[in-house]
Length: 103
Image (cartoon, rainbow, N blue to C red; front, side, top):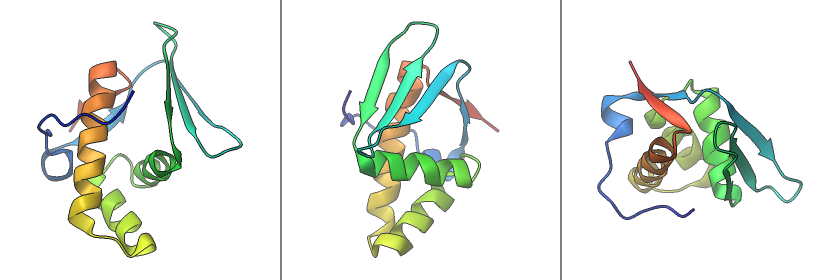
């Protein structure tokens, strides 16, 4: 699965994610993030930058803005670009049922 070019839901400005029920998470030895939906058996693999985003989202309790801030500072990258990357990816994860919107 790849990051779509669809419009984002503005996770960073309006909402916080919650982890989907029955989602298995593994970081492979090569740094790839592996998410498995236990209900469907479908497996999603993402390269290391997604692993970094996942870890940062976990550290910040699903807050995309805080995760983007952390990554941007660590990588000396543009915060807005990182947030857009995370927003688009979270849209994809939402569609796959791997995360859900929370308050």
